[in-house]
Image (cartoon, rainbow, N blue to C red; front, side):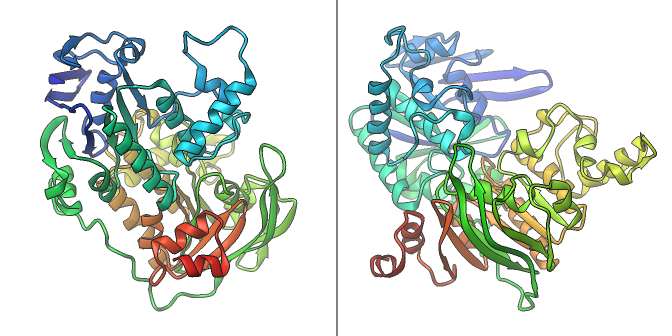
Length: 501
């Protein structure tokens, strides 16, 4: 890609960007939200056409008018926002767009193909499950499998390890290196700096729509890359030191069992507690009950057994309003579809949980709602033209700030934060981590659910590991190793985990 420039109304997304990937190379692409990474990759995959510049693949200049042109040129991408059909199965999604498939699918062979790819990548997924039944992490696995199946010569992976245990991530890295050795060019977009250093040969950093530098990973460090990304020094590995005055139990979950979307129980007798001023981390591979746990605690999923209590008061099961009244705040894993109403303004989204107190009879006090939104925008440094801006127009980091502003403004007793930094850049991650630390310092009981093991180990006072809907074990992050936690995430418990860690 040479001299790529792309303009949108009022925005210069890419400014004379040049980017190259050699045959057999793994190339990392880093940059903050809004730096131009997504636009550049959308141009390479035919979703956008550049205003200036040219693209060369295999020594020949190509014009990519559509994603089909990119696929025909041997370019595939796993997007951050998935391109899947919710009502179709995993197997059916894998063959979408294929011109070689017969009109009537051989389901047995397609199921076997999914199983083979799944085994090769160490990413288990049910071939017959419909996409809407899968967690966000499991949907990402399907996207990775689609890209591998397409046989792309240039493969772009956006946050490919977000749903893997450390052991599985290493297996994927080996797969990526094998693909590179066979002549594939692999572009890895990730915010995990140590991972991009581990798997890539070179790294290109974008900032403000421009290419800042391309460096060899052999001579780079997480700190040097973070500084290139944001233009200032970042303490990317600062561990939270808990306050000495962690208080009484605020959130108590006792023996809860809850049905899953595909039948059977997604939660199986889960018990845990979180104290005031404490961060309890929940670790686990996607699809092991973490999403259902968050929904059960926040009243979004009814229980078939067990209780959830706040401050000793038992909550009504399956009642989100009861959870809100009890002081439970919720930052969901899918911020765009569950965390906000995308078509509504920032002001309206911030008022979603407080509008009952900001109304006179049936009429909303719009002036008060707008003023409160302006205060939240300033306090949380949301980059937006104003409170009337639609939520869908915000970047991922700014959208997460809106969700956090709304949830924190209610002075919660409990904060359930599910994948709070998924898809965010290093600067936005640092900001969200600071908000979580502040919440704990203000005596909020924080339940942090994340598939990013580094994040959990850095922020949590205790870590509970989940496997197949149950608690596999609890560890102290100050002394536990990544290997030990990774084995628990894979279902290896007791003496076996201790002996192998």
